[in-house]
Length: 226
Image 1 (cartoon, rainbow, N blue to C red):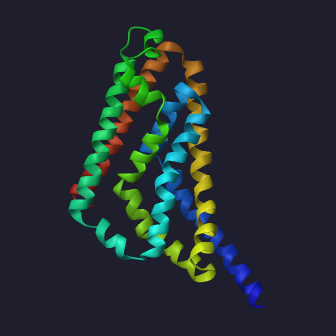
Image 2: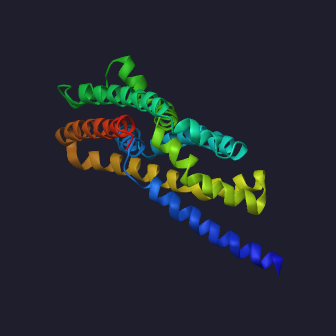
Image 3: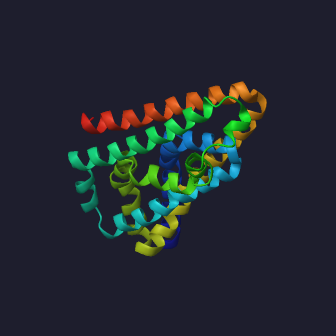
């Protein structure tokens, strides 16, 4: 009987984890926009690399939250901490957007794929690094796990203990990130084939603008303490 009760509680918890995770994973943001950008260049594998970069930060962070339940959230809610993190994200996003605009303003498509080494390194070969940066310095990602996500962590640990709780929680959460980012990267790669060179340049400009708007939104929320 006790086993049956535990099984039912785990099923309910699994459904809750997936439902709440979907609200965050499928929401538009810096990572989802980056997936389209990288997908245009390297296809669906770019989405996988972005997700890996995201996991490199997210999984240890969840472990830390599990070990220090509640205390990390107090630190992250500090106004100055949020400001520093959000301004860092702004700087990264604006630099990324600048590189996209430079690519878009290249005279022809061959130049777009033969850019300077700095741009080529940043925009083509390092989606894992961008995944790490846009995760580690996004205050609202960190706060989401330290508040709403913390309740999922507590419930998982209360039912299964620390190690099994994290092993139960994280796969149920993270698969959505992988599926979504891979899908967006694939969609980006297919879209550029249809749009052609002119459409490609317009897409880069639009994505650069979207990145800047998302980053500014994060900063305004942090500085205005919304």
